[in-house]
Image (tube, rainbow, N blue to C red; front, side, top):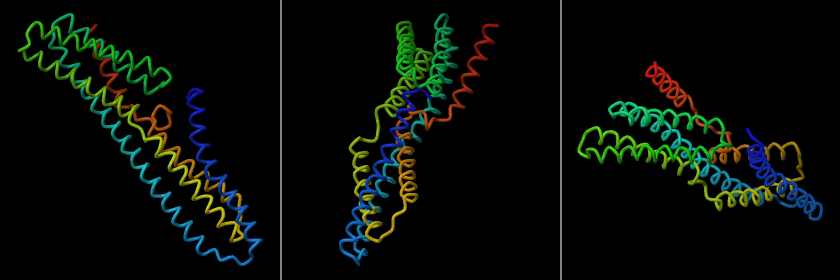
Amino acid sequence: MNLKQLFDVAIMFLLPFLVVIIPIIIGQRYGLFHNKKFPGLNDSPIGTVVGAALGLLAFMVAFIFQISSNRYDTRKDLLLEEITNIRTTYLRAELLKEPLNSETRKLLVEYVDIRADIGNDTAKLNHLKIRSQQILDKLWSFSRKLAEEDRSSEIYALFTTSVNDLVDNYNQRITNTFEYRIPPVVRWFILIVAFCAMLALGYHFGVSGRSNLGINLLLAIMFAVVMMLIVSLDRPETGLAKLNQKPLITLQKQLQDMQSKEND
């Protein structure tokens, strides 16, 4: 994990932590002041309001957690689909004449290596995305060459379909990973609701004469951890919620073994 990722993780934790701890302390102090000024104040109506606010907050957190979890599952499905498409394209490349045969398989091996590197080092993300696009463009140029030779051949149809599936999968993966995110307005709305709910909770603590810094810190840490989990699922480049790359690593080894046998 590089310096930028550490900074992002720190912000992901500190922002929701402060959104909880600060309003609780402010609310407690005001509640204690109000309790001294008006002794015997009935806190039952306040408890009702606090319960409603916390219920709304819990609903919103569950809502965006479900969105983030679904995005994570979608990325996992796209990874498995991509592995299948790469393997299929590699096998169908054997039907091509030289030099398209060897060049295609060589590019696919490099493409798999790039995909594995993205999972291991997100710092090189932009460079690896550019190179991936170049490889896909090169593979599509091979399809154009086949079309010029014989557009009606079955080999052309099979290979072009495989390359098209790879391109579609790449675009879907990039879109789902780096473009489709939880809207910022939703995240800010949750933080505002959390701030108001914790302000009311702190006031309720103060009015009832109960104040415990340990409980306050525990509540703030719990909320911060949950929000950090949501953001890490929504933003895989943070490196906290990585997909299991074992299927991709297995494919990488298989292609490398096949390449080495062909070279021998």
